[in-house]
Length: 78
Image (cartoon, rainbow, N blue to C red):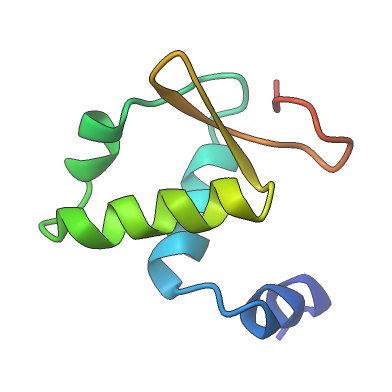
């Protein structure tokens, strides 16, 4: 297991949050609405919880109704 993944697991990230973060990082600069992200799974509450976790730990930003990954410097990826 990579050191980054171990760190995120210690911060109690769910697999949904890790998957969502990976998805956001794979699309740098492209924000997604909550509705768009909920299409990825049948469990909409888990998506909301994952977004909340990513935003509260400064791994993502919620701007103008869209969720963006944050790069290591605190800015939007892209």
